[in-house]
Amino acid sequence: MRTTELPTTVDQRGLPVPALLALATAVFITALTETLPAGVLPAMSADLGVSESAAGQSVTIYAIGTAATAIPLTAATAGWPRRRLLLSAMAGFAAANTVTALSASYPLTMAARFVAGVAAGLAWALLAGYARRLAPVALQGKAIAIAMTGAPLALSLGVPAGTFLGKLLGWWVAFLIMTVLAVGVIAWIAAAVPDHPGQERAERTPVLRALAVPGVLPVLFTTFVFVLAHTVLYTYIAPFLDRLGMGGSTDAVLLAFGVASLVGIWFTGAHIHRRLRTLTVASTLLVAAAAAVLAVTAGSPLLVHLAAVLWGLGWGGIPTLLQTAVGDAGAEHADAAQAMLVTLWNAAMASGGVVGGLLLDRFGSDTFPWTVLALMAPVLAVVVAARRHGFPAERATR
Image 1 (cartoon, rainbow, N blue to C red):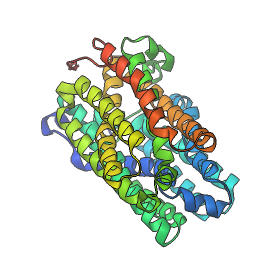
Image 2 (cartoon, rainbow, N blue to C red):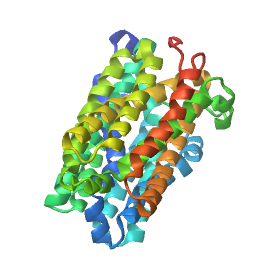
Image 3 (cartoon, one colour):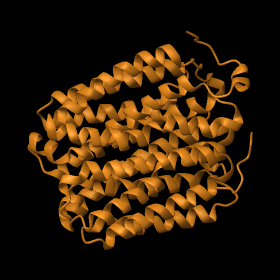
């Protein structure tokens, strides 16, 4: 087992697939822990004795934990070896998911979800950069795409499977399975992922300095608004479908969304090196089109599933696109820019959970697609405008 910086021969061999797949599994656990309540919201709220909107705040508190701690924890652990830091985050997921599964108390559940969010802050701030450093420059986009495959897999397989298990055995079973997966990936990372040293103190960049780098702000704005729009709808997809008379089809709709996300991330990984800007514009338009279909549908299962496919195609590549874009824009400040992206990503998820809950309680779930449409308009405007820095037509090879 190697514990030193990767040698330059990695560039000659190409992509270290086993190590990247281990990172993808870590991403899978992170993404599924975050989004699993969306698929089991009715059962989870009933067992905890709270409303669905209150149970939905389990996604919000997770995101708050990540947003509040990603930057300070990234700074505090900058000198840690990268593998030890990732293993610590996975251990945090194992502990938090165990408590979530066994808790019958809403406050205790929310505390466990906050701890899981803290673990996610550590993981998300380092996973994309870790994958990037495992690959030669020309293959860095593909390396990030492989690692980020865990996110759409969590949505395409994990959440539908968790929803099914929630109906069959109880929602808490899915969280216990997440604990088992976390323990397994700890062993895999220890065995297969080469270590990288942390940064020396003299090499560390103040995080806020990255804001002054041209292109970073447009990517961060796009991240916040895009994720906010997605979270408003995704967190409360079960009550939205229930209003359409499709409450029993939540797992099937999420499966359609997730499979389409896999296609989206595969296509992104194949073309991101040359078409990052085009892919980002296309993703924005696809999510907007999905929202438009949902806004006008009267509960037609065919149209709902079509919208789920469009949504998944648009969303699947977004984590890879935005993390690659902010890494390119940040240049030598890429690590600081990534930490800010993680913070804003999760701040957007926290805001989406709150905004969605307020919309659900006060105006009903009909407002969700229209909210997504309204938010996609400024996203498209910023991406189109940032043609020189942020989302250039051609990626610079550094």
